[in-house]
Image (cartoon, rainbow, N blue to C red; front, side, top):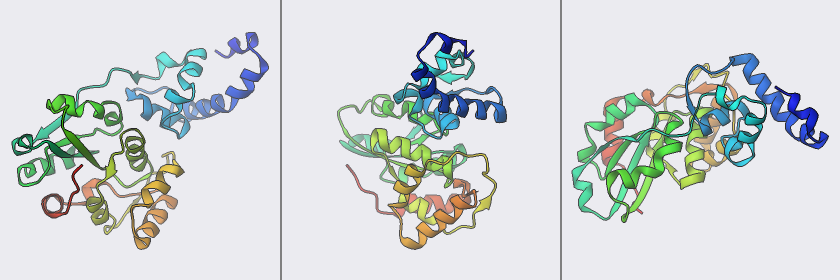
Amino acid sequence: HLDIYFSLDEEEWNRDLPYIKGINSYLNKKGLPSNYATVPERSFQLMGDEKWIDEQDGKKLLERIRLWDKLKIITNPDPLMLGVSPLGFKESSHIHMVVENKSTFYALMGTIGETQFTSLVYGAGWKVVANIHRLPFQLGLEDDLHKIYYFGDIDAEGISIWHSLYEKYKIEPAIPFYRALLRKEYSIGKEGQQKNMKAIEEFKDYFLDEEVFIIDELIRKKGYLPQEGLKKEELSDIWRNDLWIFP
């Protein structure tokens, strides 16, 4: 579907060519996707930049080469899946925890009433980037103050999901969870992941030198530390007892 470029300026072809090569490389390796993904997730997979589709005319290019409809991109995100603590609704200032994976969501859900948090949100990977803005509305707390923390896997993709949330909504990493996870042994095996170096550098700013060393080594060796590295008791203990800052 590149025939369209015969009717356009050479300048447009030269501008789009690096992106077309990137798309071609992705499709040669992975083929057309079989599962749906959010705009930032698909953008990250194609270009290593979650903002490419929305903010750098990526959608226009994909439509031009007639791929937009074939890439299974979600434009109407699902509602958030969350649990709440009734105690939190009595306050006008709230903290919320978003976790990347379902198993961590269920591990924490049982102790939300023993914490200061108003809600616990299951992020479902990249999906949360598209729907987290709905949290105050879904809770019926639009007029209150909110601060959201995020905890995901420590790998190139997990860090990119956090960074996308941070850039859009200033959502901070849940440092006590990440710090505990960094004390575990990481595994190797994330060769296929794109790296967003800006995301990794900004993530490292939150950590001590010895922790940054582990993050650097993990990324270099294409390693990963899944959230599941923390047992239910460890997760609950951190959630209940660490110091969390309110808005």
